[in-house]
Image (cartoon, rainbow over all chains, first blue to last red; front, side, top):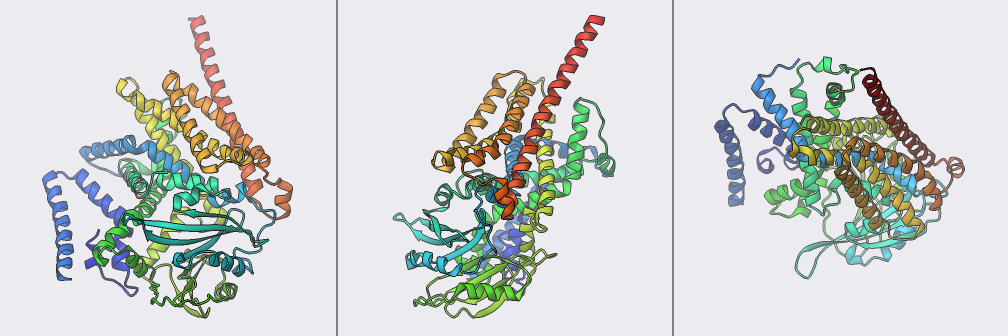
Length: 67
Length: 531
């Protein structure tokens, strides 16, 4: 969710990147929860969710380092 | 018809059941209090009506008392101000100021008053943080108690909000998994077998749940958003985008960043600004907010209720010292945006207040059904495991909280009127009564073997207490129906009537259940005699 502040377009009001991740947080969590719960191969689910998390962390880390 | 492989169906059934078992009772508390909170405004009007109905939400002449109140507040504590009508139409006005205490921790210091719209008298001044203001509130105590229980279970921030946010996620999991495990969605909307056993109890749970699926999802989604947004979402976004500066993050989202000018300047006439706002749209004023009252950079935001047939209202912004109109803006951002529009939809969809009493009535009924689904689901789960001793504590807790919670809420409202008669502090008395009744209900279910009989006794007590509430309101100095009809304040007779009907319904349900049990016992005895 937090990474959305960096990569989502800001829109005309300059707030979409801040609001949309917060607004959609319950849906993002639910999609990841059901994917992990119903995945046939648990390792692949770990990998997919892990990669998404790492990508977000790299984005945030890069954002702080470039500031 | 939804066809899932057996393995997935089993997993979803386990998720559906265990999410309810782990968090179902707390979720039931949040849903039941949410049902009451649909009519929180009306409950405030009912519990503390004024002798005269106000002529408008912001009556003409409100500038003078608000100015008097502002002058009584230290200029350093006038960072933010807001005002809106509630509890009989009294104007609730509050200054909010954040400061650091001796240990460097950020603490809030708020100062609030009520203003009688007929006499323009300032009443009930109180100071402190949010909890202190709520504890000292004498005009909206019952609504505040229900709202606080619904929003954060009376647990301190941010933990209470995080807890109800997790409960919202659990409700969403139960709704989505409930939808996916239906094999025959359309057929199950209408399947109700008339037998008094587990199968018909399961039918009732499935029918109520199926009709309620979309609504439950909507409430869970919007509810978890409201809980997480301030406790988790905004701090995280502020951390990433604004180096942790939450004030800056909020200013950017609201789209109203003031250019700092701390020179003192008198605020222009508020009545004139409110009159101007009314000429710009066909709706009434919802609330007003003022940043930096008494400074050259003061800015007045007048937020309007949505016009008839629309879901979103608008905000007019005025320059504080001159009172001149500056611009129109949506609730969030300076110009319309996808994020701002979605945010604007969250409140009407969660509170159900987009079409007045009609939509509130629908939300109340659907919320009631959601509470039934939560409770009946837990009862099904525990009934199926009745033979296993490990599940007995949960069986008793479900029985105790199922009927004990509504009784405890009614008892808290009754305690509020009794505390008013005794001139005692309202909030602590309500809290003690609520917890004592809930504890007694749980203890009774724990000690008495026949949980069904205890449930009936709790329902009977709730019925009696509901019937007593209108009388207690009158004893506490509340006005009668004649005066309320004469002044057009219909919340009082409407809620009194609803309580009487609900009380009689409880008594009727107990009488029918007792008669059915007696009939079954006689039939059994007759069979034994014949045999």
